[in-house]
Image (tube, rainbow, N blue to C red; front, side, top):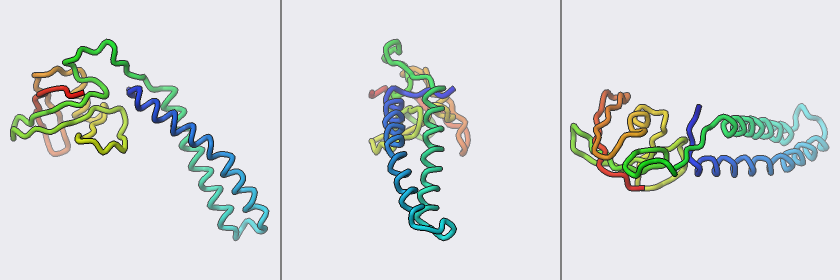
Length: 154
């Protein structure tokens, strides 16, 4: 089961709404292209049909994710505990360097001052429900890393 934030759910619902709105537009394009004659050599028709397939696949994917995902609430999470949506400052125990990370359900296009980490990634799993002051261990592709949770910013 996928855990998503309320913001992730709202973003996916808006994306689904936008895709639903594309359906009649694509159907009109297909009908117009079909009216142009021979379908074997009709590039507009084939492009519109391909777009229709991609849109329908994305709709099915989003509907499934929304139906099966668990939305994380923030009402019962202690202020010093890392949970979905939290922005945390971590200090690499080996190097002493600090960086800011945001724990997300899905990667977004957010260009914030932090690195997004999904809750299913090795670092995300290590961070979930950890508290300020704790040191977590994550088995990353380049080897094991240890991070101290310095503070929760959001």
